[in-house]
Length: 203
Image 1 (spheres, rainbow, N blue to C red):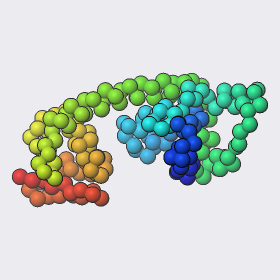
Image 2 (cartoon, rainbow, N blue to C red):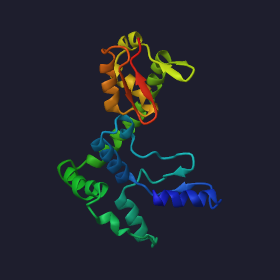
Image 3 (cartoon, helix red, strand yellow):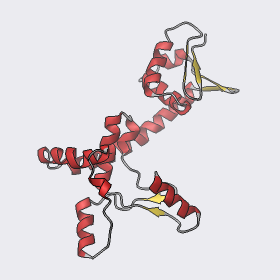
Image 4 (cartoon, rainbow, N blue to C red):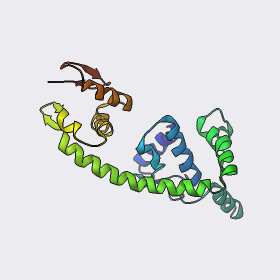
């Protein structure tokens, strides 16, 4: 966070048109595994985006070993952050403890994981398109309130996932979305809250 805040301050001061970072293939795999373990859902399977509005990551296709070899061969100066060696941090534990074990058992792990992430990124695009289609059918705005007709929801496939996608923008977690499914069976007036919104089982 400190690093990106610093980059943003430089960008805001007109010190460059884009922020460029050297994230590479292993970073993408580490990030994806980290998110899987934390239960981030389908969106977390996409790894690290190659580009956002102000930031690009042109080295995501390269391995750490290839970048290091290039730097050494071409005398490119770089700085090693000693905190990256401390396995007390979860990301470093994945990097230094887990990945070597996985690669010793599955030598093609890095290549296959990278290919999987690419497929998940493409699958998520299709997922988002379909979710947007169903949300448009489900969600009804009336003034400050949003209504989700239960009879319509009950007729749709994967209703738990659809309800989560409807509720998530209003601060409700995946666990709360599952609890909301149980609200459907309760009497009118049953409710739960996120940090910003209230969900009410209405008649």
